[in-house]
Image (cartoon, helix red, strand yellow):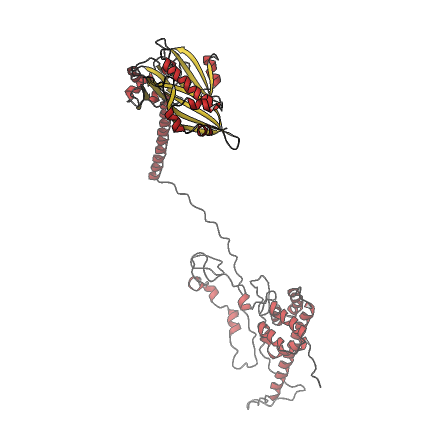
Length: 582
């Protein structure tokens, strides 16, 4: 015959009947359910509810409480099982099991008491006492001492007036969850609730102030409550009186610690005043330094050529008094036809001297002074914006400034990335000279200014027919190459030069990409004995495979000879100065 299957309520009744404390050991209770003969689904649902929620604690608390606690536990357990399948069924199962177990325990206790009373022999009467009179009812059994109800207690979770051993809200045991009364430390801090004083850090054992004497002395009522019954009053049983649980005193809110202001001492005040005074003095010194620097810079900029000399301060003061320029063939306070001594008097000692043939060039910071062997100035070239012409033009001035000061009656020529504008004037000695302004094409501003006597640079002077003829041959040589007539140019070379250049075809192949040649800045280096040496700048333009134009500038020197009866080029040398693409 098959064993009758038990329901979940029956299983829980059996388990709790055997060991009531299983409610406090949920893991062990869950394992016992797993070992039961419940169907698998019920077993899993009940085990999950026991291990993942606090319903065991709730039922344990209700088991120790009143009927009202038991009525509330169903609602709290159902709320704890919210979202769990069959939540109400599981709650009812536990409730029924708890209810049955409680009744069974009560019945067992009543039966046990009755059996004990029946087995106990009747007390023999004392000899001095008369026999007891017969009565209709048996004498009442002596009353047993009943346990006084426990005072309600508050849990740390906030649940008030718990009456059982467990909190009906969170399930904590009373010894773990009951809010402890506040205590006062010997340092004066009141309202401490922990094991240590929040003010001085003493432990409660070390720092708790002793209670008042009156509080320590037991009251007469309490003494009477604890007085043991007299020996001859065997039947008197006094109820146990619970001492009231002291309520924690309200703890005052901690006051914020505010920093106290301390008045500075006289020494500190004096130190602060000294620091402030030093700061003011430092600011004044800096301001004076900036003012002096600006004034010095202003004085320096007002002098046209004070930056050109490296002499002592006494010399600089004399240079600051710039001499008046006497003609328009002047620059930076200097005029053409001045002597070297006059230049030194105005500018001081030069930085260095460069010599080229019969010319000497005195190099200053912002101007170059060219003199001949007779120690007379023949050229001036600017090298910075501080030097100006007699009419105030300097490097950086615009073409409009130049034309406003000098007009538009001038010669002009195109030279690479510059436009050269030259004005004719007379020097102090009455020589014809040129004032040149080199204007940048990119922004129409002055790049440099030069003043010179032209006849000193021209290779063809009126009284030097040989030099003039040699220059014409040199120009013809380059023009015929640019025009594609390379055979004529080849015949202007001497026999030695032709051997050096190779055959005519080889010579011709070297100029197949030539577009044009331009000669400028021609100077007669030497002349005599049927031989002339000329220096010049050559600007050559050639086509590139990408159909662009390559522009190259060379500083050249040519030697021409008339030894054969006509002028031929006997030597050519060139040094590349620059290159650009157009």
